[in-house]
Amino acid sequence: MITRTPIRSSDSTLCIVPMGKAFDVGAVPFNSDGWGPPETAAAGGTSNLPLNVPFAPFSRSDKLGRIADWTRNFNNPTRSKNPADSVFDFTNDDSFPASADDDASFRLVDGKPPPRPKFGPKWRFQQQRQLPQRRDEEVEARKREQEKERARRDRLYHMNRSNPNAPRREAAVFKSSVDIQPEWNMHDQIPFSTFSKLSFTVPEPEDLLLCGALEYYDRSYDRITPKNERRLERFKNRNFFKVTTTDDPVIRRLANEDKATVFATDTILSTLMCAPRSVYSWDIVVQRVGNKLFFDKRDGSQLDLLSVHETSQEPLPEAKDDINSAHSLSVEAAYINQNFSQQVLIRDGNKVTFDEANPFANEGEEVASVAYRYRRWKLDDEMYLVARCEVHSVVDVNKQRSFLTLNALNEFDPKYSGVDWRQKLETQRGAVLATELKNNANKLAKWTAQALLASADMMKLGYVSRIHPRDHFNHVILAVVGYKPRDFAAQINLNTSNMWGIVKSIVDLCMKLNEGKYVLVKDPSKPQVRIYEVPADAFENDYVEEPLPEDEQVQPPAEGTEGGETVTTNDVEDKQIDVQA
Image (tube, rainbow, N blue to C red):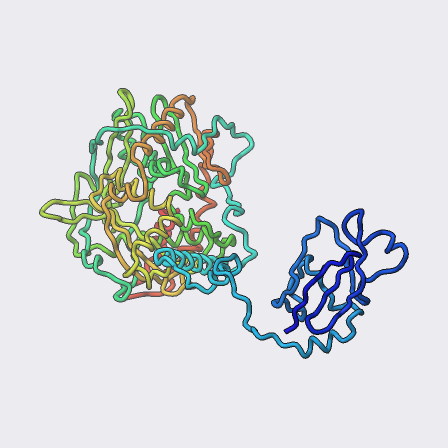
């Protein structure tokens, strides 16, 4: 071991005197003016600095890096370089030609990677990605239900939209139920938005007269299911009467006796009461005679036909000869409704008769089971309303007689509604009814209003479907369900006070008109009704034009025989057609 002892001589020369041998490193000039080498030596060109020693200039603001950094890896191009390291980076200097050989022979003793910090943004990010994600079971279940619901809506949408280029329901153009003539004078137009705010309460009605005869309801039909369906029969020998107000002999008699000032039928009243739910155009004739008001329907009016798919969002075919057009379905629904109301009865000849016989039937003529209740409501101190209401059957419950109304919903093609009755009626009857309430809201509301007007104890709804979607002549009964009218009205949000408020407002409006004939028309494209003043002889000859299309639609079911039935004569067929018209 050699020990060097620095000794400062008198001539300011630094000498290192080794213990064994002297070693002269040269003279170090003394700078009497300050630090660093003297300026005179630099200017003279003489320097005692070692040769081939690189000098990197730097300023006072620069930070000095590490003298020796054993952790650096210059072979890693992704490693960010510290600018402070460049001051002492001599790897690329030509002053050390043998540096590459020295580096190759050099070997680092500690080869372990540098320790990572326990806490840092990079470590947290990687660990968060690797940790198992906690998921709430309720949230996951809700997401699955939403996905199922979305898939179901998409499936129904594509199922119903067999033609993607077909126009939507809002784009459908409906025709007016009556041709508006240029000489008609429009008195007023009432938007449906004003009807929703009306309310009027009437006292309990009184029965003035009860006519007709009723047969008993067959309770075995309450047990019908799609698995034991029953074929819908045809009743060609029974006559159905749809007589307007002024043609009713009983109403004429009551008008002559001054029993009331306003006269109508339950069909007309229910149309007015449920007007805000209607989409198709309809019209009612209003006649002001003295201080009396008569609400009538035209000959061949659409009020006696049942609308199908009226409030649905999916359009029906516009071609009138199509079996699924609005007109063809209306005639088919009226045909089904009449046959259903007679098939579910006990036809053993046992009938319940009332004060008078059917006022529209001839002697010896077989008529449908129906009873007419002529009832009177008090609208105010000087105004009474008389209406003819219908009930279709009777049943004894706890030794008490209950009146029933019988109506049938019909399924023509499941692809239009998206619900197959044969699959859903047993397990999801509520879903089937909800679909019908959406697609036929106006028709069901009118049936409920008629049951309330007649004070029926029960309303029976039958579910009748085609045997095949393309066969509109043969049908089967899949189920029959009974409802109490008041409960069903609450279920479909049908307010009786609002119903009577609409009737009272229209009656008050018509009472302000002069004597004459008017027509109340529902606008085919807007939710509003208009009142036109028409000539006294208007609508007198309409019956000549209407029976022809009705005949074409109703006559085909009589082409063959079924269940031993015989085809009736042309006179009976013509009478039925005239009644349906």
